[in-house]
Length: 235
Image 1 (tube, rainbow, N blue to C red):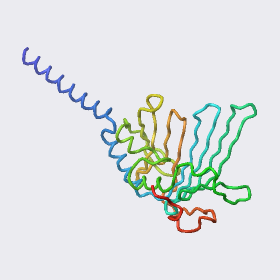
Image 2: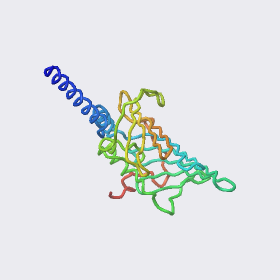
Image 3: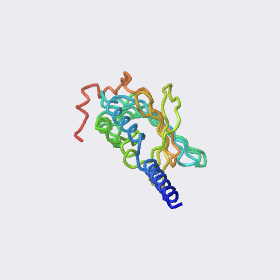
Image 4: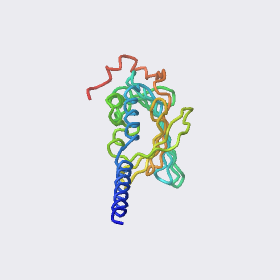
């Protein structure tokens, strides 16, 4: 009887250790295969020199925002379009912006198709900084915060799906956000590990990434048709 008791107790202890170990691996930020896959994504992003990014955000119930970015690191530039529809005002409101950032200079698109340097200066999203942070493997504005997700995220593997014609695996990421726990998703390419879709629950946003390293050549404002380094300040 005593032998069977101790054997039964030993089995319970072993099972308990296995469960605790599984739970720790599952709940630890970036634990297990998720951390490895996200590290592959971070390494893949280091090789990115061009990408298109389309995003929709409905953080405010009465406001819908659509943005489109075309980033060309070889030109030290990006093209940015922004459309806002606000139904919260009496007559409704709509804003459209069309900008080009080259080095440290921001240009506004005019109705006659010309570009004029913004009198308000740059918005701060310098293309050189963005591209440099990508090359360094650091979190970069406009891209999913992969490095932060590795360090602080709880990563759960989801199903495969197709985004913009590319097969990717969706990952569910839990992070501490500005309003409590933030639940994001990132869909990483099955073959190239690059992010093709990302969502952020508290922003009610969805972002799609496409045309990585495509032969993207932006038509720059005439005043900038010169070596891009001439417009790029030190960072």
